[in-house]
Structure formats: structure tokens, C-alpha cells
View 1 (tube, chains in turn yellow, purple):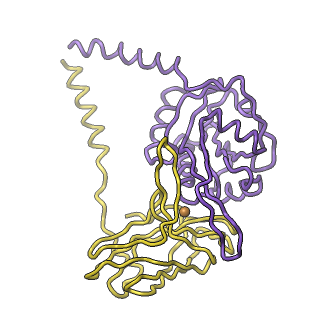
View 2 (cartoon, rainbow over the protein chains, first blue to last red):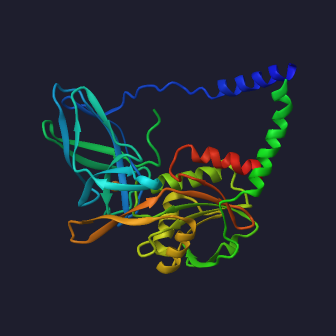
View 3 (cartoon, chains in turn brown, blue):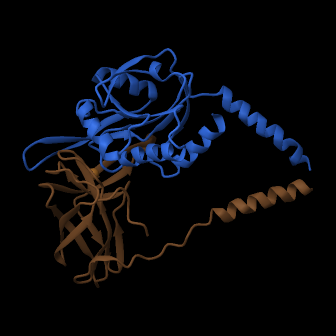
Length: 157
Length: 191
Ligand SMILES: [Cu+2]
């Protein structure tokens, strides 16, 4: 019986170790003009002439649906709105989705393995510590400028 | 009380099973490939005696494949870069992933010790992918402002571990966030 109690104790200690820290909400809005906010953005490092991607969360605090319809950047002539998806048989694919509608009072999260801004063949290396400028075009809110840091992973939340 | 008695037995049975089962034996295979430094690599011959953790990637893939590469890097870091475990990023896009492209990719990721990116002749790479059951297909092409055509690939999301006797013993979805923990645990249990 002693062993059972020991086993239970060990299990309990593992469980308590696994408890995660609560997510603190990010208060670092990278742009706050109007009621469309872009937060938690970053760009993955990449090499000139190759491919890389940008990620961020769009919060629509306006009364109606708004749609991200186009993105341009100072590091490339070719930017596309993409989505990664899982196919049958454990295959992963990527497709151009062209636009991202965001309903009123909700957000759209662009993150690795999901929606992303594809940066095709950048003119120069995009290295950790660099800043990349984007212009986001929304059907209602119009154009918004966004500057994002280049880093290896999403900002800590 | 009964469970307590059977528990060690079950445990040993599990370990015994792990030792005798494997996904595939690559011992009779021999693929001549090339790494990021343009050095000839014979797979799996060159790695016999070591564990090999390998992910399958193409460098024109900026979203899923970096998750695979990141997982490989994390596993190596968590194991403290041991000499008996070699890491491989194997490209299934040899047409574009030349050694110099892979060299750049390796630099961006800041990995080099016991960590290679390999590519090779298209036919040999295709044969190797076949034996690993890694599937690829062109998903779509896009034309840049400059008029260049670029293709993207749908591909299997895989990470595999090969043991020192060239047997494939472990397989997971390469980009999944739980993979580093699982493979580190597996390797710590069997090494
Ligand atoms: Cu993409």
C-alpha cells in the first residue's frame, strides 16, 4: 500500500510541475490608429532571394466586418496572403487565400502553421534585429503602416 | 495490489517490444548525396554507429518547414548536442536546394555541429524519399512581379529517428510542437 501512495505522490508532483503560467495579455499595440489594431507581429529571418513570412494578430474593434485585402512590404515586390493546411495522409500544403475577413469585435491570428504573409524573394537578407515595413490595405479602414521586428519566434505573451 | 505486481512486468514487456520493433531497416540501402558544404554523403552508411534525427524540408517553404527545422534544433539543444546523435535536414526539392542554398539556410538557423542539410541528384533524392515514405507534389505556382515562376510543394510532415544499426525506429509529424519533447524522451530511454 505504501508503494501506491508513493506512486500517487510522484504523479501529483508531475502534474503540479506541468501547470503553465497564465498568459498575460499583450499591451503592446504596434499600431492603434482607428479601431483596427495589429499586435504581436514578427517576421521570420530569411535570406535574399528566398522566402520568409510575417505573422501578427489583427483585432477588429469596429462595428462592422473589415477585410485585409492586400499587403505590400519594403523588402520585396511580391507579398501574398497565404494559409498552411493539412491534407489527407499527413501531407501539409500551402495556398494563397488572397484576403482575410475579420468580423466585428473579433480577431484573426496569423501564426506558424496557419495564415501568414508570404514574403517572396526579399531583395536583401532579413536578419534577426532588422525592422521590416508593411502597408496593410483594409476594405474599410484603408491603408495602415506596420513595422515589425525580425526574430526567431513569436514575441513572448 | 495486483496491478502493482504486474506493473514491472508490463513495463519490461514494453521495453522488450521497443527493442524488437522498427519501422524499416535501411541497412541494405545506400544513397549518395551531398551536404551544404558540397561534401559527399552516403546515407545511411556514413551514420552507422550513431542515432540520426531527420526532418524533411524544402527551403522555399517559409511556414511549415521552419517548424520542422526548429524542432530539430530544439531536440539537439535539449540533448546538449551529443556526439552520438546526428541531425539531418533532408531536402526534397534538390532542383532549388543546392549546397550553397542549404549553406545559407544553415547559417540563418545557426546550427552546424553534428547538423547537416543534404540534397543531391533528383533521381536519388526521389528514391530516398520513396524509401522514407515522404511524399511531395507541386501544389501551385505563382508568377512574381519580375515574371519568374515559383512553385510550392505539398509534402509529408515527418520527422524520423534512425538507430545506430540503420533501422528507422521512430516517426512523428515533423512540425508538431510536442515533437521535441517526445523525441528527447524516446532517445533518453533507448540510448
Ligand atoms: Cu506561404
